View (tube, one colour):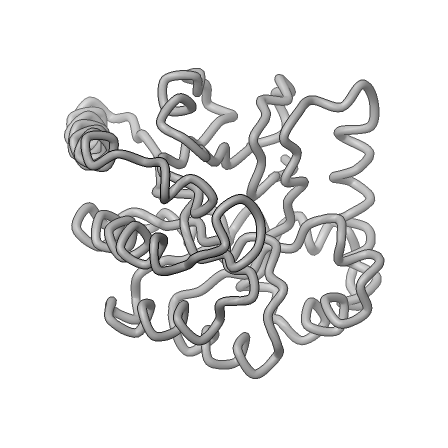
Length: 239
């Protein structure tokens, strides 16, 4: 099984598990029910300024309902997996004023803490405020750093928490990211496409190439990377 740890598409392949990340409230009801799709519900920081309080309340209600559904399914011998995201801080893009984003990010973290689910985090050029807000939640909260682009010093601080680091295809061309990938323990690693639309060709090839690149950087086999990522997914959703 391959794992795409952060994407915005449904590839429709039985042997690829995807962590599908929402960016707006419109995405929440578009996520299909499938064993290969693990939904993440949230508001991207780009849309924090335009997001209404009603949508935030709706997000809280949705997560509460999903948690109740998950608990009921466990009693029936099944298990529903879901998370919060994507959320975070971003000083670039459509809403560069992170003052609008801080409260939204803190609310997403609170939901993840309250309902004991992982949170997928986006951070671009806002590491100081990000670390400050994250420090307010328990260290054991499972966090996936989507397309991690921070410094190694930041990574070391995050490794003291229950943090996983996901790398997108950009790691193959940015030497700084590749070096951080080399130093991140395999048991904290994920890989992702971050696709926003289904490519006409090459989805599987893109993901496989990323697995092969990570294997070369870590000096292990692609099968070893695959096994670690499968185990990391189980750990991410451990009770």
